[in-house]
Each structure stands twice: as C-alpha cells, then as structure tokens.
Image: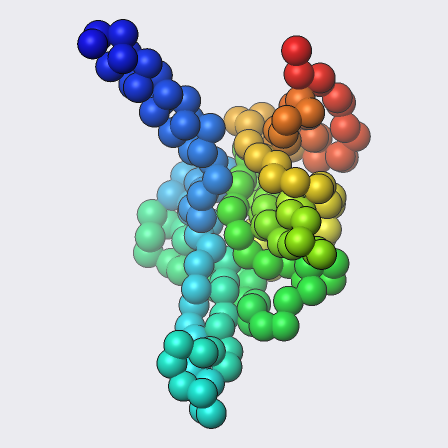
Length: 171
C-alpha cells in the first residue's frame, strides 16, 4: 500500500512540474509585473445566436505595480486564424530580460499538431515569429536573461535570445 501511495504521489508531482509553465500567467522581470493571456470579450453571432460567436477577442494583458495598472498589450480576434501570419495568445512565458515575453500556441494543419513560438521585446505589444515545430512541444523560461528551453520526445534544447539552438538528445 505504501508503495502504491508513493508511486501515485511521484506521478502526480512529475505531472504537476511538467505542466507548471504551460499556463496563461507569467511573472515579468520587474517586481510586481505579470503577463496574462485570456479572453477579453466576445459577441454572439446575430443570426445563429449562442453558442456561436461572431467575434471572440483574446488579449495579452500586462499588469504592473502589483496589480494597480492593467494594460491590454495585444488584442486578437480568434476567427479567422492563420498561424503563419498572426500570433494567437496561448501560454505566456517571461525570462529575466526586462520587456521580453514569449508566447506558445498550438494549432492544427491537415490534422497534424504544430507548436508555435513567438517573442516580444516591448512588453507584449509587437510579436515576432520565431519557430514552428511539429507535435506538442513544451517551453520553459529560465531565470537567466535571454534563455528558454524547448522540450519534446526528441530531447531538450536551449534557445537563446539570438535563437542559436544548442541540441541535447534524450538518452
């Protein structure tokens, strides 16, 4: 019984840790700074009504001064979405670089899952596309300026702000 309980606790801990940075909120580099992604507002379709939406906006919010100030940095209408040209707010990450924010989103092309990485160097106002990967990939921010990690079944990779990729193969 102890062995089963220990195994379940270990499995739960590993699952929690592996999903810890796949979230819609991230701390910024400055004290009292947060980034949040989520739905901002939606309008029901005038013809079909609920649950169909005519407009559904997702935003990247920037919170400063420990919650005293809130700004919408980036606003996106979900329909129609083209992942090659537009950044869809998804999971947000921030490293120790002031103003640097990363966004990861998952999309499907021809039934295949792709993970996208976008980066902003101006607190989430403007976004630059950095990479597209087939399959689900996890991204983790480091507490070092300009360093994030990408993980997958093929190994883990260090990605610096200059985005020169160092490859580490899984054993």
